[in-house]
Image 1 (cartoon, rainbow, N blue to C red):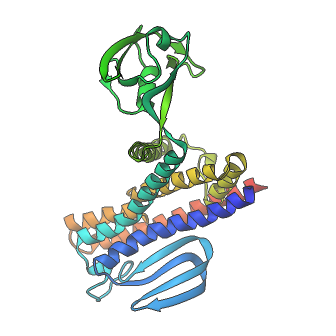
Image 2 (image 1 turned 180 degrees about the vertical axis):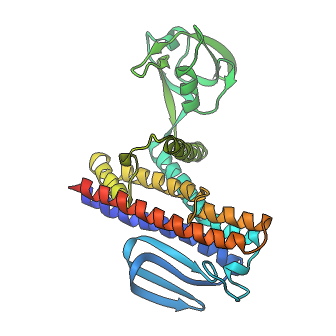
Image 3 (image 1 turned 90 degrees about the horizontal axis):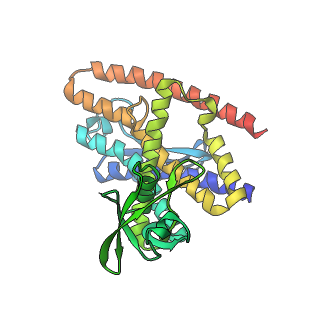
Length: 335
């Protein structure tokens, strides 16, 4: 299963990168820009077919891909080139790739929740001899408020209970269409958080699963923000980051432990991470190019272009260097 998981991870990673580039490609084509090449994979050419003005390529290394726009990295006199487009059109094309990855993350998370079920505030069970049971809660009750604050998902309710500070926890519930209050004590779990002895219900309703999928993807954005905050504080270790090799290994391990579902979950995480990371205003990434597009609207002249070219070159060298170091670390880790 581990080998199968690795193979699936490689294919899925290729699809994620292809989806990212397809976002750029689709919006560029829709806006009438000239696309010179759309490639699935990197490195030596395997297959190639030219349709109208665009060459469609399949290349040997299944760990990347690209969409090559006319005038994307140099000046072009073609009126349909990227460089001749208004700022808003450039920004739409640049944002399309990360947007596709974030949407893919939401869709995969949603489908996983549809398969597994997502926790909802309607209780499946209330354990006997627990604070919740003694407070009068029963299976079928729907919790809508904790200590006077409204919540519409079980994860938020669980956190509100876990981090509550009062001697008792005030719960507003709906039972048979009637709203009532319950006043519960609490216990402490192994993480020293408060629990009251309830079990969430499970829903396979698409709207509930979609809501959970969106929230799961949003959590990835928070994790990315925390990572860079720790990075600037110097609290990130080399083992905290992984290359494509490391991600594929993780997916293989996940397949061995938890099967295909775990691999799909990791692919969703990677897709969302890929989307959010590319939105960051870092040179050589889509977010960095959006930033410079905006700067050109504010500061006219060639100074911004030259500065962007130099910064992108430095950024690309540093990014590739970092990727090589991390990949080398992950390859050593395989043995």
